[in-house]
Length: 237
Image (cartoon, rainbow, N blue to C red):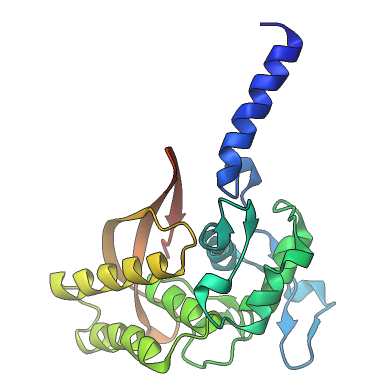
């Protein structure tokens, strides 16, 4: 195969996989140190000693890149998610695209979406910055930034309350309810409707302030036309 044919073939493959937001793992956001963000003052801290590692935030960012991606138009949208928060809508606005998902600025701007959220039931490790771990906490964050109905949030909080009453015991019934709800929510928010969600041995963990939550991992597989793409989301505490 000559050079021109090889370049053409490479371009065809890249174009085919543009139906997903990332061509490979090297394009996915990688957690890094980010500054604290004050939602009230609408500004970032310049005191670098208080910067934090955005592990959970980065995971949710990668997830939303998939949920918001329009494979047909090859861009990001939030209209299908409903009346989402102004910050989430602005982050994925067409005016801000295309994104360079590997740059620090991309993740810094994400802080405006996810840091200092007003719902006091969302658990943070560092003031109202640096999200705490756990699948249920992640569901609360998602519900907040998409402006979910209060009954939706109460459903998620019910999982936390049940875990607390059971002293952290995650029985089969509760585990099944959490998995069913998570799958329903993510499919509802995804622009790509052909998705499959698999859970890996969920278990209960105790986090800051005695809070019980659920950890382990989920695998999410997206399909558009005949092309499949799998992302692995780690939620280990």
